Image 1 (cartoon, rainbow, N blue to C red):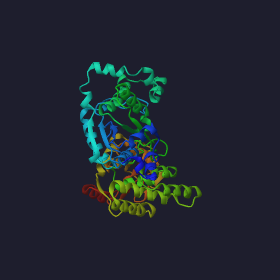
Image 2: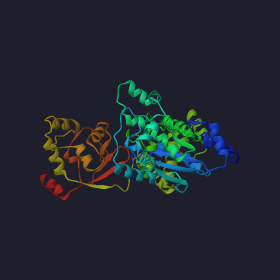
Image 3: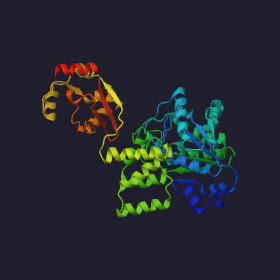
Image 4: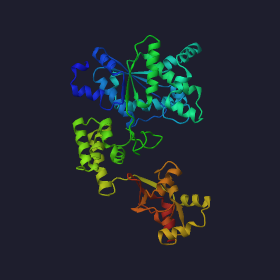
Length: 443
């Protein structure tokens, strides 16, 4: 189907909504008019196993083109992953081992096909062509570009100007990604706006080898839950599409209000007319932003987990966070109090701990424990620094009482106590029998 056979609204959705730039749009339209099945290039470096909503912006575009009858060629960057794409990075990235690459790729593809049609996708690995590359071919490839051209790339330019190192392997990255387009004879390459340079390298390499130049389809970068930087797992501002429904729903509800419209536009199928109406309602303050976020969260959870899961996540949010109720089902985790005491005694707590606890809790407690040790035992945090930050931010509660200091009296930790961390994580404490027996004797 060419674009003349599509409705104007449908065509506008594909080429305008959620699009940062198309190079060159007139050429792309001619390709769509040609009637042939187009080869859509999507590459990924399996440097991390999970896909988040930031990736989904571009994946949704691929799916839209597939629905027109076109084919996606998914390139697993098992070669470039050993280098690490420096896009948006201020420093070099570590190389990955082949086993890490394979494991990450497997998980990535499972999630990739939650959005993109598997039946209209061909999988290719870079090693199909690069493992056979000779030194002669590498030299020929590098002769296509000058150092000045590569240093014109913004992230390279910044790092060079500030004196930060740029390895020769990193300089090769755009050339290798660009050569992928030659290897598969791509018609269109898709990527985030931060991939513009790399995509244009592919376009130029194709022209140098006598192929028609690919068109470049760039999508905006989705801002993460912090409201400032692009969504990234390393920045901990991401919403993973494989996360549990309640987690996705809660994270969407936590985004700053100014991001509501962007999320609706970039990662949902809500009609443009409704989004325009939402914009007017927000402008005139005729709607509570929370109501729009609830609609947004439901739409996003439904995409990846289905309507029933979205309904249940919404009910859970209403019950736990709006009504401030405790969920009916809370995971239970065993705690060895003797081990917690042993840890703090081994570290040798400072003499000021007991007076501080007396000041904070209003009574003298002779047995302090480190709340961070407890969080780690309950598997509510992964690192001590994360636990310390949560305590500092007063994001930890026991039985509804907000923890105000790093060290707490042992007596606060009882069998059946409910610990809450942040807005969505609950654990019921189960004291091991020998601990509870010992404590009852002492009391």
